[in-house]
Length: 117
Image 1 (tube, rainbow, N blue to C red):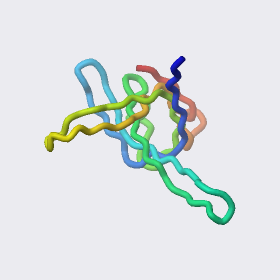
Image 2: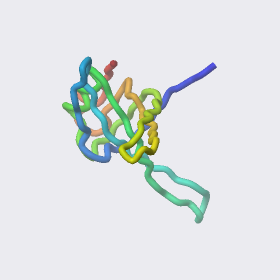
Image 3: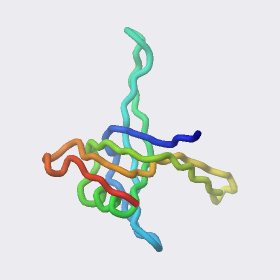
Image 4: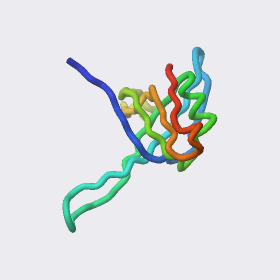
């Protein structure tokens, strides 16, 4: 059995970018998620920056309500993008395709929002 589900809470690293494709609208961005490694006095803190993309109605939510620094909870699945660069080197990246977003900072009437592809 395979299972591909991701849940993350963090702050948006930069204003998300929205563009229109042939069939839909997509918003892309990066989510900063804090982590801690180690125990006691040897604890180290850091931030992982995780790429995300939101399509359709979920993209509309990001476009309307989400800016740099906004706290969000996202739920979705991982996809791997692979491409050949101009330097003839193969590149790849993982991104979360967002199926659901909850806005963590802001008025209560805007805090929980669902969307889909």
